[in-house]
Length: 606
Image 1 (cartoon, rainbow, N blue to C red):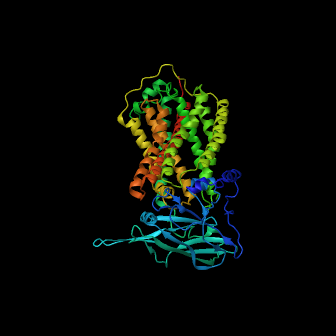
Image 2 (cartoon, helix red, strand yellow):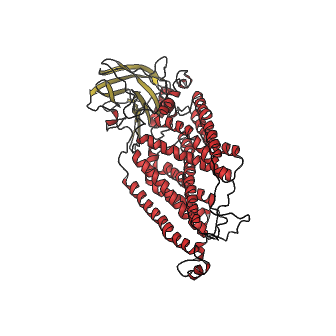
Image 3 (cartoon, rainbow, N blue to C red):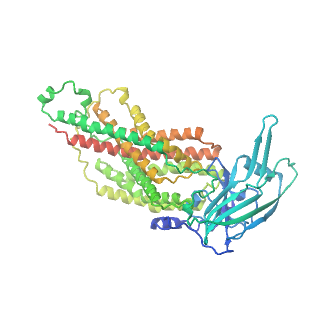
């Protein structure tokens, strides 16, 4: 594809990274608006086309038999725009600021039967196009399809050969742009013989109007004139559902901490005679078995290097997710600037690698780990390797189908350079600081050399049941809001309620911490001291529920189809579930660790 090989297309790849690093040019006061004088040329870039129901399946506009210049010149794109599948090129449309145009001829074309068939297939798959005017995307359908009747059945396909551009300005700035075919009759593509050519004349009109709106962000109709749906209402059902669940869980944990534990500690701290005298009907010996395992509860787990790597990468993604949402709340992402969140995510991932190295190495040294170099390598590979494998498959499928979502070699080298020069070194530096600053684990109870035998556990205290309960409750807290997030990432809606998103994110972490403490208490009460990995798996299994929801969303809530979209959807949905497993597993583990330290510090030992 021509656009991928252009030498100037990626000359400004580092610019968005530097802009984000300095924290400039993404604030609400900076929208990248160009100032024009009357009669100044306004460049319209053609960008991409693709099936309406497959958001990630996009192709370059000039891959269709449409009007194109003899020499295609491409716009220099930022890293975020490339990752978003943008491939902007100059067009034949001549638009001048505040100058109307009527039925202006764009080009004359003679289409072969093969080219007509290509257009017919695109229209049948509901292809839409995206143009860009002054950083404003304008979208419309390539053609028109009509299905009518059962007997007789009619199938009509037409191509839009005339476009009406409507642009609004305020002073010397363009505020809004849209394209319409409301009063246009499509050109029929039916009934063409195999050896026949189809003659077409493409035309366009331009209409300017003044608006009182001073900024693009103040315009309520959105940046695409309603071509894609927008969901701006607050999802009260999601919020109420999450708040009720949080209150119930927090109250449940508070009862454990304030009533049951207080009674447990009071009983355990009595002398033996008083304890035996008060072991009546109020307490059951089996429910208070957590004191008996005080010499084993801090016994270090197997695969401690892997455990520390999970905690380190989970802490990194907690920082990354919080950082993205906070930046969005501060207005650092302009909805008119393509790929801003993609650029920010890459930069923040590279910078937060120091967190994963520090947390992993620090805790690894605390629990007696010696192979800290291997621990650093495992930490830096725990996410990057699965991500690279998934991306390789997805990118190969896009490349084989000629999609603009396939990254060019220069962009791949850029991302690899960012990881090699920023991400990996910061992981090592964070690991060195974590290792050197690690203090002794300082367990409240001394661990015996010989492990205590664990009594048989009832079925409801098994790992599978804990994973089911610990994963379902946090998932239920975000299930309603999860639909809107999926509709934004894998659909056409625009999510701008970042305050609600931050609130739901905090609820998710709170529910995960609370349910982890409750499940850990029940596990210890059964004299089972193998809580280390259990705490990670119990709440981390929320990632599995999220992936199962993605399968449900694909089958029942979306109209996605085709190999390209399916491979991308399930590949990245699997990665998303994996990320949530790491994040919530980390929250769960440290919540359980804090809880266990609390109850055993307050327990008097003989």
